[in-house]
Length: 68
Image (cartoon, rainbow, N blue to C red; front, side, top):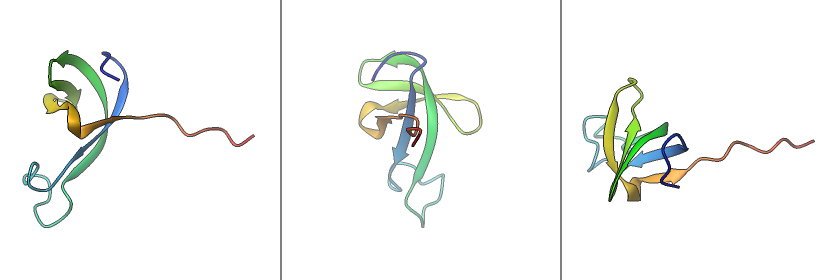
């Protein structure tokens, strides 16, 4: 999973991402891995910036399968 350019889904719980929506569930967004830094991944944010996110909050994204 930790390869630059790979798509991931970032899921931050509300206690980790209070800036997103404190009364909600946190933040979830699709991202691309920009760089790998040990226990964190530099990923793209919804605003187009690049921020470090701990690996445990990132999961691989796979495109939906074509039902045909």
